[in-house]
Length: 264
Ligand SMILES: Nc1ncnc2c1ncn2[C@@H]1O[C@H](COP(=O)(O)OP(=O)(O)OP(=O)(O)O)[C@@H](O)[C@H]1O
Ligand SMILES: [Mg+2]
View 1: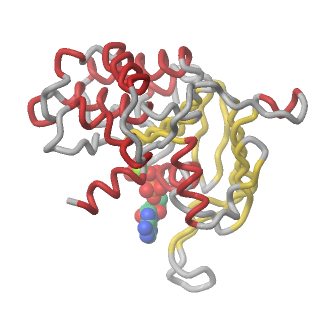
View 2: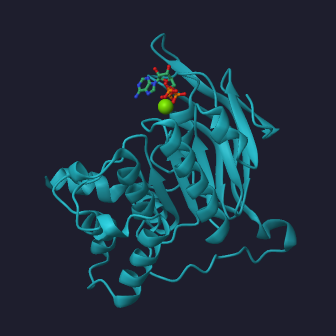
């Protein structure tokens, strides 16, 4: 139970302050650049041995603040591997990752955890809600490690988000008493409770039916616009990818950017 909570907390954002976006201060060009991945390589196994499996090779990606980006590619092309690097859950073998101009690829584990907590929110294919907690408790859970009592302001923000995604009536229900779409919307609220700059989603609509998938896609786009959150979503859905500002296709370990035009 404890390790479950810890795992849960690890992937959540822990950010106290208001949603003011921290903009760069080093000239106009840098102001809107949120994240850059430069010449990234990443594989599994021991490099230099036959067990080594290269996944990402010389990959480059740039994300502007507030941009909505889809990552697409066939199964095994490295989408989750890439998201884990962007989400500071894993480190590249070589190359640089810059967040607001600061290199995070050299951070140690503690620095990476602090970075994740401050800046990132995660939504996965399966919602990973705590089954014994209600919707309301699940949403507030990421605030607990801050050590303080949950403030009125934080509760108001939680209520605002829950109402916004249309599940206020369900707030006292547990995940087993909610629909798949309601659980996934709860997971989105939980990911936003600490007001992250960057929301990472790995096939967030993968377990939903068409109607709920479309609704969740619209919701993520709406939240990204209204709260100025940069959204990176891995998806197999052509519909979802088509609604983002940009689409990166992973192929042969590299990412090619295309303006999103509604098809792969
Ligand atoms: N921990 C690991 N150890 C060894 N190989 C791994 C590990 N994680 C992923 N791989 C391999 O790396 C490759 C890329 O995996 P990844 O999970 O990033 O693909 P994906 O594009 O997300 O696929 P899917 O669409 O099926 O989720 C796959 O061939 C996978 O087998
Ligand atoms: Mg994957």
